[in-house]
Image 1 (cartoon, rainbow, N blue to C red):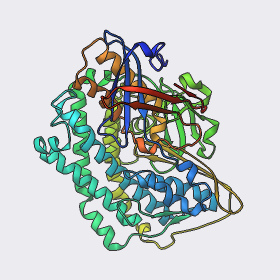
Image 2: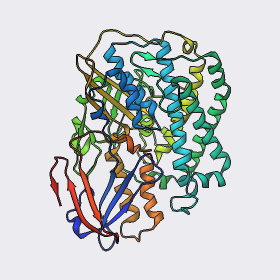
Image 3: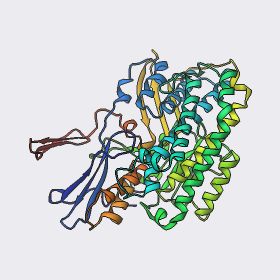
Image 4: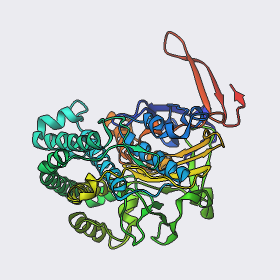
Length: 493
């Protein structure tokens, strides 16, 4: 593992190709490629150009406000931030959740992951998978999918709507609800609400199975292409249950290296920093986490559906478990390292969510009225959850006045930062190096980024050490001045 294409020796002598914005992803990012006169790639970087300061501006706020504030990080997966922060606050208030509270949170989370996976697969990724990476750009979007494959598009819309309905009924609103609070939840499910959700769940399971069939067929029609696209090896990290099962809500941290060997297992996430360190680099707003014992050069890793399906010993719902076994057999029993395999793993997870929702809806605890508990107070709280895009860490410290004095968030896209850059470099070398650039070839870069389903607006938070790049353009579109601020705060022209 090297970073040989991260920094060119003489960037001033190279021409710059910029893909901005990277389309069909959540948030705003860009890719810069530095090429010589013969279009050979000397530098490839994926930049996150949005900036948010949540870690700083929640300081001084009462701790019980945090689960509501931080969900404003994102309009796609606010439930994940609400739950991550609420789990951290559970530690602060010393709560052991009641069965009703934990199962309602799990139901809310499964609805969140279901709708997010459906959004990504049908709306953002399927145009590339169904039409081809260099197909006509005019139809490479959800409108094009609806015209050519109306039933697939209809199923995608309905799956997302169903997930959002679960979120509304468990948290009060489809977006930015307030269901999870320190020590529990603030509402249960009524009988009428449970029946309403049960009415359609079998259809959601059937359509999720269809989605797995679709991506498996697409992938296996040209396995060499899909396996080789943006290929590189890395470690993986995710939560697993005590018995090694996939668990999206709670568990211990497991990391495996690129040879499928355990690095650490069932790690108590309340001390995640013993294993995970965050590095700042001068050219990105986003940090680069790595596993301490492996060092910055070799310790970076991937999170998300591919990591979870590769890492777990089994999936605790029957249909998804059968699909995981097929997935595993395709990889010869080893972890699949292909970037595009994210889509396949993501649909297996969507099927697991639909099955898990049905299982929970038949659980009478959802109708209970013991919603909140509390115990011995603590000044520190850590909450970790498997968000749609991967492991999400919320870490807070409060003072004796119960005000936040420190916050650290490591979101899923941040964990995948180095891996996304590596995918960009691999695709640039294989498809762009020495070739005339076309829109279709540049879309290959975006396809590699989209596979991770990055949420770019979630991924930048810290204040004080962020690099900044400013360019002054004249009326004719030429750059007349440029200034950079490094991560240490020094400026250069």
